[in-house]
Length: 117
Image 1 (cartoon, rainbow, N blue to C red):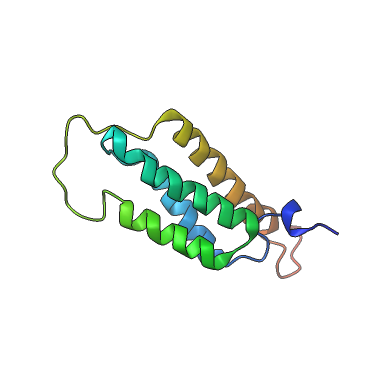
Image 2 (tube, rainbow, N blue to C red; image 1 turned 90 degrees about the horizontal axis):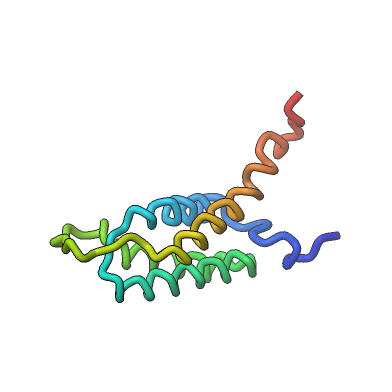
C-alpha cells in the first residue's frame, strides 16, 4: 500500500487541481519587475508543498495567493523593464504542471471501470 507521501495529490479535489494547473500554465506569460518575482515564487512553493501533503485547504490558500498576485487580475501600466519568470521558477512551474497532471491522466477512463478497451 502506498503512503500519502508516495502519491502526492491523491484524493485531492479535481477542480482545485485543475485550477492550480491553469494558474501554473499561465504564470510563464506574466511580466513583473525583477524584484517582484519572489512573491509568486513563494506562492508556487506553497502550492507545491500543499499538493505534496495532499492538503486541499492549503492548496486553496496558495491558489488564492497566486490569483491575487497575477498581473492579469487588474489592468496595469506595463513597464518595459518587466520580465518573465526567472529560469529556476520556470523550471519549477514546468515540473509542477507535469506532476499535478499525472494523477489525473493516469486515472482517466478508469474511474467507472472502463479500462479503455
